Amino acid sequence: MDASLPIALATGFLGGFGHCVAMCGPLVGALGIAAPPGTPVRRALLPQLAYHLGRVTTYGTVGAAMGMAGSFVNVAGRIAGAQDVVAVLAGLLLVAMGLGVAVQSLWVKDAEGRLAGRVLGAVRKLAGHEAPMRAYPLGLVLGFLPCGLSYSAFAAAAATGSPVRGMALALAFGAGTLPALLLAGAVVGALSARSRGLLQRAGGLLVALLGVLFVLRGLRIHVPAL
Image (cartoon, rainbow, N blue to C red):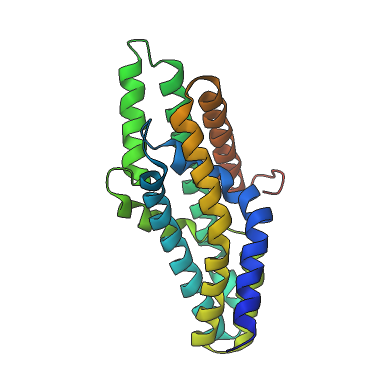
């Protein structure tokens, strides 16, 4: 077996518990807190699995393109504009998810709670909690989000000079990131199912804040690195 594949897998695994959880944790957390209260953890993880399958599919496709071109710089330059658009879309999604959850928790006993419920219902549909595979295309798109760690894997894919080996390397890296992100999603899903109040409001607002940062970054307005 090509030694680069287990190295890519280990890079994704180790980086997943550091960089990926820090950068993408709020995003998978948003998928988790969109689950209806009391949803079993296993069922809450289904849309997250679909989301990650989409994300890893994008990684494999980009890795194949890098390997076929044999140049990280050329391919990355071509998708740079698309990444700005994806960052803005991801940011708006996070703002919708975060505010939907925070507002639902704040106004759940008020008449306005019905409006908040509609907002959260729309978020749950988008997040795939009514049909889990709806989260797959979401993962396909958000897999293009700029990320320093995935860029290192794509650079290695370009160095293979082969679309097949480049795809395999990127897929191995993406698979390595799954344990940390699925664990993060499971923890957030369990917490939000058991506690609504202050914890959910704070989590929703933090997710919305991350969304604003993504939007600003996509618009190329200077913000701290994510």
